[in-house]
Image 1: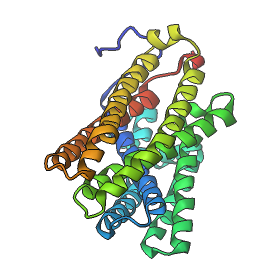
Image 2 (image 1 turned 30 degrees about the vertical axis):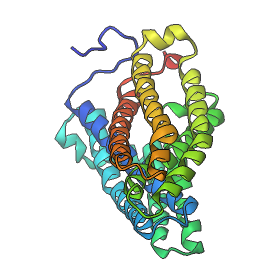
Image 3 (image 1 turned 120 degrees about the horizontal axis):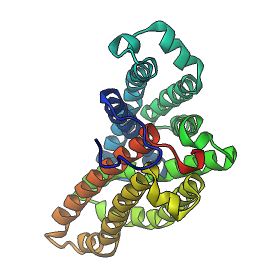
Length: 298
């Protein structure tokens, strides 16, 4: 029994489903880290060298993690489809079926994107261009599977890609910003990020809400389905994230700029809390796309 038993659109949750959720959560971390690191470097070119080095390292490590995570997810998917457990995870025939489907196409796009993201090590205009193209490919790859395959296809795919890029800009900046708090010019960087976030967060929310509405279609479907309940949990976590971000922008960042001795510690603690909420959001997203069916597909 699970807390959502009785809700419509909930698939069977077994050990392989749980492994699939965990692996997908890690794939989101890698994708957002790769895209977010690239976007941070492209936007904040004058940031402290130590902060930029950290962002570059995050992008590279995340990009390198994408391929092994893809391989693990292929095996888990083969095990789930075949019902053969570990034998199915390594069965060439089952793996071939997955490779020939949308997930194989996703793997190619994402792998190419990950390789291009490694262009950040060049730290020149060509490196920036290559890595930005890689980030875009990774975002687009996520539209090739899952709930964005419904109708209207182009609208859903576009909303998801924009949503992912906006999320990556925000999430990918959190660890570099945690470092920036104690950097010499950290207050200026934090202020600029807050200003840009004020522009990107509405895009993130608007794209997410529009996508969710296309998936559910009504308030009744939202509260009466496993998809809707999980989505509401995700929205609650996002709301908490927005409240923390508002606290940072309105109080803590100005306090850091004013050299309040306690503000830096408080801000770094808040950023850690934001990272924890991001983890909750990514797990909820993995649940949404692994074991629930949108009401529009009932």
